[in-house]
Image (cartoon, rainbow, N blue to C red; front, side, top):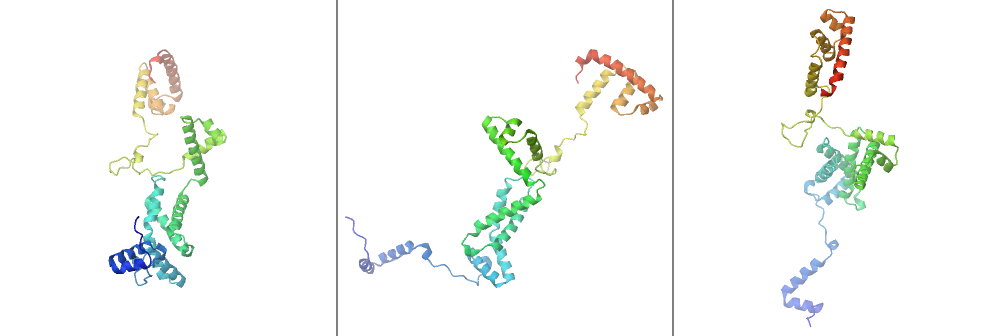
Length: 310
């Protein structure tokens, strides 16, 4: 049988005989004490606010607010904001991952600090709620309010766009392909024309700066978005070369005057009167020559149309 543990008077007698056992017993009892029974360190008002624990800061802030000491309240509030600034930056970084690249992190942090100020001003210490839990919602809400105020697209349009995107993903996973317009309209219980209108309005839901880099590299030589935009008014060199070759082919059987009229009218966009002034001919005579040329070219192209690469 194992020996019984000493209790009561027997423990005291053994402790008197062996002091090392007494110290071990005392340490064991101190460890077994519940956390709530330990005495909390007293508040030391002599310490500067920067060295005060966060719990004591809230006590001092509450007392200063009740006393109406605005200067002390402002100083303690600034210290509390510095203590919780990493939380604001963390929330802003999490939100930034779901936003377009045109949104800056500093703008989100600035909006979150306003939410933190409101949370400090409206926090009630007597309710027993952790300030971190309370201010997280206020900071996130302040950032979202700032984003909505700067959004040029109505919130209802964004909600409908998100609903359409979720339906598109669900049908794609179900069918293993991109759903048709009719299938998407049937899934959303919308009219065909109504769905087309919603899709067209949801496409313009983001704005980007043309001066942004095309990729994420910080290289100064990297392309900007404005460098890859198509200039629809620019002349396509390949198409211009093909048109020139076709024009040379179909006008090779014409006289110099006839070729000049065709080139000035179709390539340079001059009017019949302007061409007549250049050739010292009347406008009606130029129109007559042009009609004869077109009749001959139609007859020529009718026989050799299969040999042309248009």
